[in-house]
Length: 368
Ligand SMILES: C[S@@+](CC[C@H](N)C(=O)[O-])C[C@H]1O[C@@H](n2cnc3c(N)ncnc32)[C@H](O)[C@@H]1O
Image (cartoon, rainbow, N blue to C red; front, side):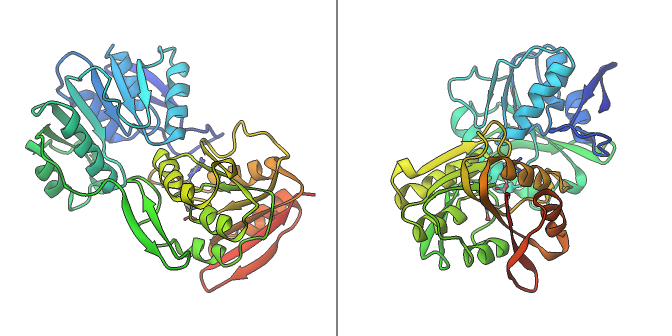
């Protein structure tokens, strides 16, 4: 839990999911600077990519009407948690993507996303939907600002000017221009390992090629007629391979990224009858009924926002065990150095190595 001061009022903020003695705080210097120096007129605001709700809570405290957009399911959970922790009312509008029916804002506050494809897609969308001249303020820590940011912002915004740096964070002020990047929203790339084209929406994990860990796991997919959970599915490459090789199997593909779920929908729909595919925007397997899956496949993430962490892998492995039938199996891939065999042995009482190369290892654990 950290104390975050906005206009002399203290907010209590936690990352999500909350963890005892978490050394990481739920806000950064860019959030502080955005709240104290956004310079936007009174009236409704749109807020994009707020990591754990610091901006939502801080602007709520300033009695702003807010439309709050985040691709991440976990960020939505964090916002709800932190509003409640501070006895603040829920926001008027929250969604994974902006809604054209929302009230037009006096300005847009945008926390710089890690992924510049997402920033480009968001600025393209804002330029299409909102009047030219609408103010936009982008905030980030300086170390998170890529060297290509000035060119990108000048391409898509007018009147671009940076603030001075405060506590190593900076704002970029600009106005919507009505211009477009002319880049496609969805990038499609051939995947020779699958013999299929893969479609990636802007914020899905990975570029225009297969993740090296996923490549190894694809070579060692199980044969099954049962229910397979693709946990942290991204664009769904593991489910694509699984459905191709197992014409009777059903897939539940889960990810916390909205764009991952949209990519997965586009990639899996041509491969199987809709009755064999379920897609879920969720935090790991929270709320999913236990004891039902024959297999769980997982290529776990090892960072949350900018921080390297193993708590999501732990949560995924624990949830997998709960959702598996007795006798069901979890098959994962990870960098050798991450030592996932230790976690699996602790949770499942043992694990076996299914495949390995110089960098990655595929491990399997059975629920007894
Ligand atoms: C290493 S990528 C794997 C993507 C894909 N399965 C592959 O093998 O290429 C990890 C995925 O986990 C997702 N993820 C991260 N945290 C999550 C959470 N709490 N719940 C569900 N998915 C999560 C990320 O969005 C990302 O798509």
